[in-house]
Image (cartoon, rainbow, N blue to C red; front, side):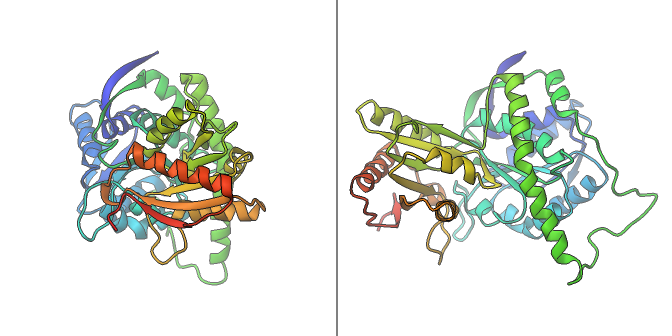
Length: 392
C-alpha cells in the first residue's frame, strides 16, 4: 500500500532514510542540502527513528564518522552539497576503497568562486572518479525511490560500495511535489535483506586502511574496479524487485521517443523533464526527436546508451558542468569515448548549460533540438562545444 505526501526533494530523501532503519547519520549543514538532515534530526528528536545522529564540525568529519560507523557494520547515511562535498573529497576515496556501503544524498550546487548556492553539477562531477556508484534523479519521486534502492545496492555482498543520489539544487530540493511513499513495513521488508558484517570489533582492535605500497596497492585498486563492474547485475536486480513492489520501473537509463528518433538530447537530472516535454511538443509537429536520461552515471551505462542511439543520426550531449581545459564536458566525454570504442560514427556536439543555476528554458532546448536535427540532415557539426543561455 502507498500514500501520497507533499514533499520537497530534500524532504523525500529524508523520509526515505527515515523508513530505512538507518543506524548512524553524521552530517553538517550546507545550503541547499540542510533540509535533509534538519528534517531527519526532527525524526530522531521525536523518537520516530532510533538513529545515532552525530553533529560534526565539518563535512570532512561527517564522512570520516560515516566510514568508521560503516566499518562496524552499521547502516549509514549522510548528505551534502557543493563546497561540503569538495571538503569531503579526500574521504570519498577512502570510503569507496574500504568498501563502505554508505548512502549519501548530494544536492547538486555549483562550486565557488564566486559564491553561488544554485544548481549545476560541478560538485559531483569534480568527484566523478571517486569510486562511488552515482545516480541522478529528475524529480522528488525519483529521489525517494532511488534512496530506498541505494541501500540495497550499496549493501549487496557483491558490491559493497557507497552510493550517491544526486538531485538538483532548489529546482528539486526545495520544490514541493506529490510523492507516492510506501508503508513503513513494506520498506522495512524491502531493505532488510542485508547481512551486516562486523568488520571492526572494538574489543579486537585492528588497523584499517594501513600503509600499502607498491607490492599490493595496485591489486586493491583492481578489486575496487571489479566491484564496480559487478554492480550492474545488482542494480538491475534491485530495479526489478522495486518494480514488482511499486509498479515504478527504473533502469540505467530512461528514454523518450527514441524508437524512431533521428536527433536526440542526452542529459542528467531535472532538465530531462523539460527536454521530454519539448520533445513531445516537437514530435506532435512531425519532428523525430528523442531524449535519453541516464539515471545511473557511475557505472557509466555504455551498453544501454549504445542500444538507445542505434537509429540516431545526431546527438546533443548536455552538461551542467564544464571541464575547463578539456575538449568536452564530463557526460559528453564519456559518451564520445563510448561511441568511439563501439566504432559508431554519429554527429555529436556538446552543450554546456545552466551553470550557477541559470535556467535552461523550453525555448533553449527547442533550439538545441533544431540544431541537432540540422546536424542529422547535413552530417556536419559546426560547433563541437557550445554554451547555451550565456551572455557572450
